[in-house]
Length: 184
Image (cartoon, rainbow, N blue to C red; front, side):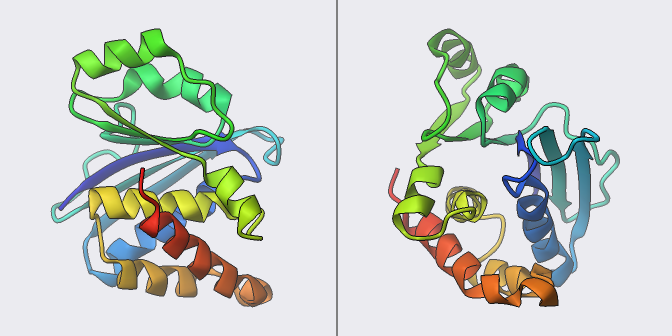
């Protein structure tokens, strides 16, 4: 199983943490993995994206320029990256925050790209998990792609949440399950 993933959004949306949590599963499974964050100097509120590659064989390039799986959490990221998804790829987008471009999506569909709109920001707010839309989205990406098991992803989140933020662990695990159980 391989995963070629690009996650993009605003700084502060948990783009880098989402990528780190996904990448950590590969470390647990003793697979090859790369996690390459990219963000502007302003970080919170600026743009951020993260390339994650998971594979059974060595990874030649850690930069994902033509994602097989694209996760977009805000409008500027959707606008910037939608046209780069490789043929047969998948796009996961936060339908709470993104206005979809039918013309761009029609071109992608001609290449066999599938789309899943998940209202993860609204879901997080409704569940009292504000700030955890990224982990809700991770749960849905996990369910659809099957890049690892739910149990291993839970274990990875437990290991990725720093001790200074241990009080957020339970919410992260709830958010992951909420996204995993979401029916799109």
